[in-house]
Image (tube, rainbow, N blue to C red; front, side, top):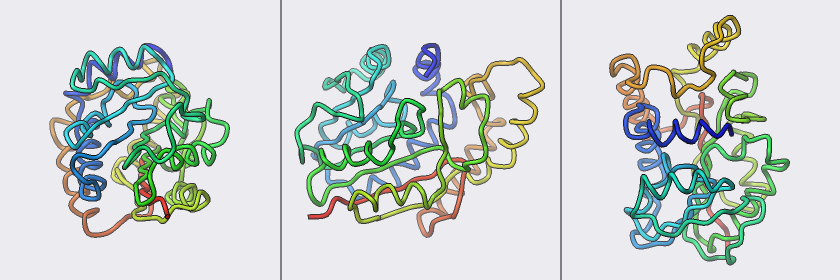
Length: 244
């Protein structure tokens, strides 16, 4: 990821509608499956914009490949004291030492040659019966300037993300698309961005989400997702349980 994107993440996570909506989505989908007082991993957690909320549920360990990201994580979330520079492909963590691992928009990076191997590493550090939760960009054919800026090398279908869990022996608890309503405008923006020279980062755009319209639509979608899944979305979510 471009280094300036970490600064953007840290400075906008409390006011950008997407971060607030994503934290709410993860809390609603993953939160009920967690036990308070557990030990949790925010793997490749960046600045903590999407995973630091787990500190309110128990002991949280956060890792990232970039120390700059963890510095911003520490500054923005001083309640999280266990921070470690680590490569998700080879975590310096003991096997079966966490109750759940969360990994948000990491497997998509071009620096990850094998997402399946990375998920296997996450499963290794989670105890039997524990959870691995993945949230990644969806719609595989939708490659945008923002993807280049964040060094995104791939996008996932719901089936593809689910299969990463299955291939590593996990039982799939949940698999769904999210932000389905953003797919058409994202496709239109992809075409428009090719004709302009504006910022490639989505974090520089409309942080309030069309004056609150997008947050409201996201709330309505989350209400639907509490009852059922959807087949695709600009993001896809999959949660698996470690067998044993």
